[in-house]
Image 1 (cartoon, one colour):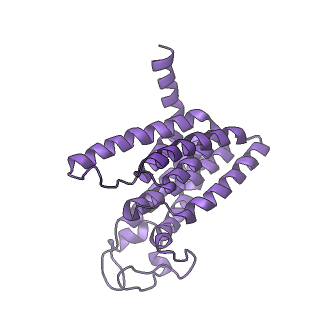
Image 2: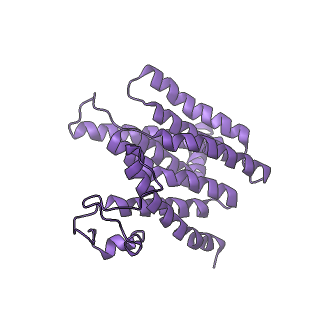
Image 3: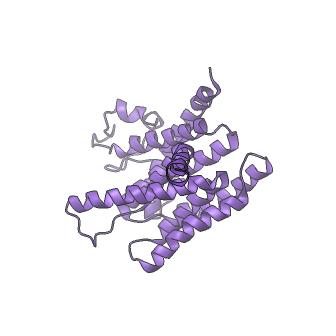
Length: 260
């Protein structure tokens, strides 16, 4: 068995468990509720969900997407968050050979599905997620630097300033960008920059391109120009693209446009 397969097998249950926790974050953080207690409950009848019915993805499939107590449907968003979070975590630890870099990227990408859902639903990127990230990731970066894991704190600072600072300028001159987007961009730029500034470029470029496409689709569907379109999901998608394809996309761009 290859090392990549072994990392994937080890990461999968952790990814599903973290994905299950992220469903709680998505429900409770925007409401200002505790993410620790009480236990998960049915959104329809309020019945406490038993441990046997709280197994990520599997329980939802066995119950056919319904509450065991009241029979009301439980949104497919829950297993989708669990699956996408697990996929991001497994993908990160497989994509990066250096263990610490893989762990750090997995921690960043694990936030992306939950942030996207919250921003789509509520048009916010909660400070309760951003402020801890702005504290925890610098610590992880410094630890990785001390461990000689191929992480550079100076590049992390430059990445945060470039991506976060760029969106800050946009936010100051435009009403379409919120400070939550700025903080998220700073976190993404910090983590991606600590590995290589090319990843920051790809994350920013992908977010802009995907956001532009999303805006055009929204206009085609009849949403007015003044309708607020959350940018968080595009920032999240840009981070995922950069993590998995940053090396190849940056090499292609440099070869195609800068070296002829």
